[in-house]
Amino acid sequence: MEEARRWSRAPLKPHPEFSGQAWDLPGYLEDVAEHGKAQWTMDTLSLVQLAIDGAPPRVGRLWTYLVASASILEQWDWDNFKALVTLQYPEIEPIEDVRDYFDEFYAFLDESRRSELSSVPALGAYLRHFQVLFLAMVTRNALELSHRAQLFLRGLPPHVELEVSRRLASRRLLRIG
Image (tube, rainbow, N blue to C red; front, side, top):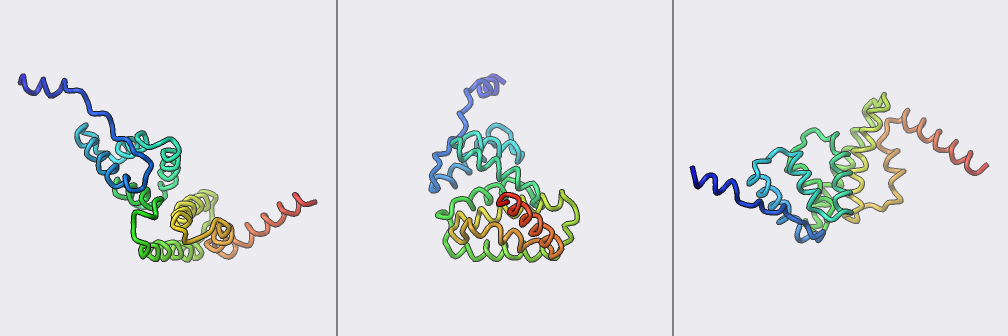
């Protein structure tokens, strides 16, 4: 009993800190998981918040954006968070893996093009998922930012693409005129 009391009074280790350098990321994410386990907080949300809190401010804001955008992903857990964050550091994985992400991105565009996208929330979900995948491709130097609008439209069903293109064209005319 006395020993248990001594352990409970032990000062907590400060949470892990991320340097912002790509080569530190795998070890940092492992440290976050171990720290969470030591603090009995293994739920995904707590681990993600711990990871964001230990990251430099700019990196933390990016990760917060990714988490907010990733709510459309089917499975949301710690491993998916680690994979999503790791996508932002192309130097961590071999360049051959870009082909897999490229295939996933274009499969997503093809699937979206065949879907209905009949509501504003569905279009918003498409936009958020598109942004996450597109950002991953840009950070891997597989796509240029200048391709964003064209690829965004490419993933829309034909009737939605026409309507969005028409509205964008009318906005451009209003700005010019």
